[in-house]
Length: 524
Ligand code: NAP
Image (cartoon, rainbow, N blue to C red; front, side, top):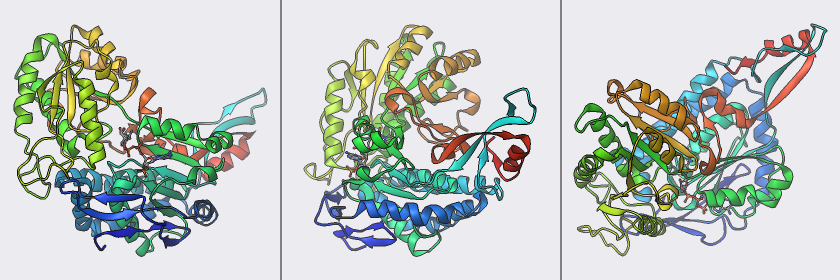
C-alpha cells in the first residue's frame, strides 16, 4: 500500500473507491497521514443485495464442516501475512507488538477455534437445541427447537480498537452459521481490516458474496437492511442507541446485537493481606489492564475495589508498578505503552479524566497529555497511565464514566455487601475479576456479581499464573454484558452462532422430528 492511498471498499464482489475523503487515517505517534477512507457515493443497497443473493445460498449449500474449512483457510491466509499486519497495527493503532498480537492473533485464534468447532458438526446444515417433548395426549405429536441459518446478510459495525479481532470474531460465527457478512470497520483504523480482507479475497478462499467490507462512513447502509438481516454492533452506547432507534431498523425488525461500553471492575477480597499471592496477582492484573493497548479495550479494568484497610497498600503498589511503564513510540523495543489511536480519542480520554477528578484525587498521571522526549505533543495522542483514588464509592462519575484510555479509579469498600453493591453501580458490565484465596467468597462473588456482569474471572493463587487475563475475550466464553454494556451476546462456543440462525419451534409427528434430527447437529 502506498502512503496516503485512498482505501477501497469490497462491495458486490468488486473493489470500489468512494468519493473524496471522509477520514484521514493517521499514525498517532507522529500525526503522519497513512491513508484516507471514504464510502461516499457507494451503492450500499446493491452491496447488501449481492451478499444476500450470492453469498447466502453459496454458504448454505455447504455443511458446517465445509464452512469450518473456509474459516481455517482464512486463518491460513492471515498467518502467512502476519508480519505486515503487525507493522500496520503499530503505525495506525499505536500498538506495541504485544498490543498488536492481542488484536491480530486474537482474530486468527478465534477463526481457528470456530474452524475446529465446525469440524465437530459434520455434514449438518441445521442445529437442534433440545430433545423433542410431547405436547398432547397422542404420543406421536411432539415439538422441538431447531436453528436454521437466516437468509439475510450480517452487517457488522465495528469499533476502532480491534480492527482485526473485531472483524474476525464476528466473521467466524457468521460464516460458520451460513450467513454472508458485510463488515463496516471503524474509519480511524480500517487500514488493517482492509489489508486483511484484501489478502483473503485475493486468495479466493471464500464463495463470492460471502465477505464484503465497507471502508468509510456508514452512509445510508441502515436504510437498506431487511427483516432477514442481522446487525452486530460494537462501539459506544451513544451510537448503539442511534442504531436501535433507526426508523428502518425499527420498522423492519432487523435483529440487533450490541456490544457497548462498560465500566468494568476488579475486586480484591476482604481478607487479603498486603504482599500475599492474591494481592500481588491483583496488582499485576490491574496494571496490565490499564496499560495494554493503552487501556483501549472494552473489557479493561476501570474501577478497582479494595477493602478500606488495604487502600493505601494497594495504591502504593499500583503507583510503583505504573511508574515503571515506559511510554513512547511503539516502534522502540523499550516502549511498554503507546499512544491512543487518534487525537480525538486523546481529547475524549483527557476530558473523562477531568470528570473523574471532580470526585477523586490523582495518584499518578493527570488531566494533561504527557511530555515525551522526541515526540511532538502537538501531533501525537499520548495519555499518561492515570490512577485516581476515591474516598468512597458514593460518586456518580466513577461508576458511569468509561475513560477509553489508560485510566482507572481505586475505590475503597467497607464490607462484602458494600463491595457487591458498588460493582453493580456500573449499570451492567462486560467483565469483573475477583482476587482472593477464600473460595467461599469467590463463589458468593460469582453469584452476586453475576447478576450484572457478563463474565467473571475468579483468581485464586493456584491459577494466578495460569489464567488468560481479565480483559482477554476467549471464544469459548460468552462475551457481552447487561445494561449499558448493550445486553449483547457474542462468542461462547456454539452459542455464538445463535444470532445468525433463526430459532424455530417445529411441531409435528415423532417421525418427522426424528428425520430432521438425523440431519441436524446438536447445539449442546
Ligand atoms: P463508536 O464511535 O460508537 O463507533 C463504532 C462504529 O460505529 C464505527 O464503525 C463507526 O464508524 C460507526 N458509526 C458511527 N456513527 C454511526 C451511525 N450513526 N450509525 C451506525 N454506525 C455508526 O465507537 P468507537 O469510538 O469506534 O469505539 C470505542 C467504543 O467502543 C468504546 O466505548 C468501547 O467501550 C466500545 N467497545 C466495546 C466493545 C465490546 O465488545 N463491548 C469492544 C470494543 C469497543 P466511523 O468510525 O466511520 O465513525
